[in-house]
Length: 181
Length: 159
Image (cartoon, rainbow over all chains, first blue to last red; front, side):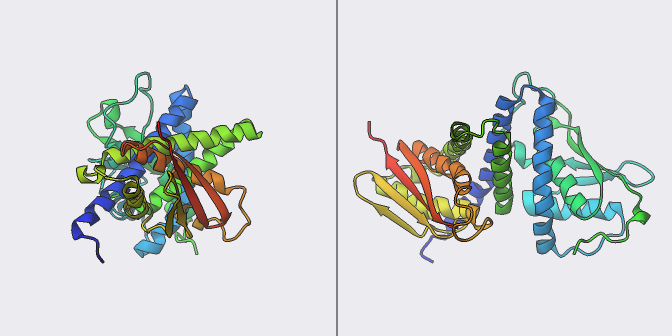
């Protein structure tokens, strides 16, 4: 290879910026097209859902995760393997209730908002990263797990952390098979 | 560290989303959707261009800038290089890619020729935006004869 070695970090950075910038352009376009924050949030969630249903195959192919036996294991894998693989961050996981079907992912760093300082004026209910909720929901559904995924806290809205809440909707012992063929 | 596949999936959803919402199915309405995608690509291209290291911005010649697109930008964005660059040395350049990643998942051959332009609009804007940051005004269009091969035509706009 005639390419000098110091070039590689550049490509990596451009590639990472590409996704974040494209996402920003998308949110900006949706804000232009829809007046209500709820509509933008809904579209971001829907788009995320579509991505999640396909991303999960890519994830399973790359990660060789073993079968999970609890919601808590699944949430750990989402945080420690999936987020790490695609976004380079590892959110911490908290279990929110004793029946162990409600969890929170606490995002210390969020690459999606790297170039966003604050929400646009008049958009205080915008869930900027709602795509992520849709992706998680879509991915879980493809492995036969229904879940509600929403933002519980958002740094962009002034909260101290960004927190994504995952609530698994069916009883664990009703589902025997998690991996789709 | 956003994996390249995330961008591909996002791009596919964007195209599907913007197309589904185009309330006007006539050619005029379709043109608007293409323009919206191209414009988004332009914004992203500009921002990407602004993040490039200083030494890449000092191209002596137009051709060097185009070579940069073909080698470095393509490698960073699509993890491959282009398959050819042609020019008439009078301001028109054609970038050839026989295996364009955003078309590869669709089909091979001529089956989805009609759909192909929507998957190329964002990239046209991306190229136009990056060139803009390099100080070059251009018009970028794309043509597909058989998926997944495509050509991007860059016409430099001189004042």
